[in-house]
Image (tube, rainbow, N blue to C red):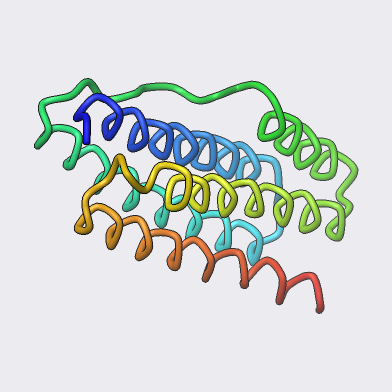
Amino acid sequence: MEKEKTIAVLNTLITINNDRIEGYETASSETNESDLKNMFAQFIETSQTCRQELISEIKRLGGEIAEGTFVSGKFFRVWMEVKAALISHDRNAILVSCDTGEDVIQDTYQRALSINLEDITLEQKDTLIAQKAMLLADYNVVKAMKLL
């Protein structure tokens, strides 16, 4: 296992959590619906917790911490859809876009846990599994709200 590869995997997850935080901060500022604001705040808190755990592990490994967001590709398009839905005040479109974003996060964690398995320790794997579960709980909130 190469330390640089481990750090790269962890930094990818930091970046996707940064995307999530930025997206939900933007979404929160664009809506007046208190239940959505509360949901977005919960999601931001989850990603901040995940990000901090990842940062701590990279520091322990002596690596450089990724800053910023991906701001490209599928995740960027998701947040543009959320913003458009917020502007039109289309609650269902907001939730559908959030659902898509949460799917991207789950996919990113799944790739880290399957494709990069040889690049992470068992302890790191346990941390990522726990984080993926926390993020999945948030995802399930979006799914439940879509049903209302």
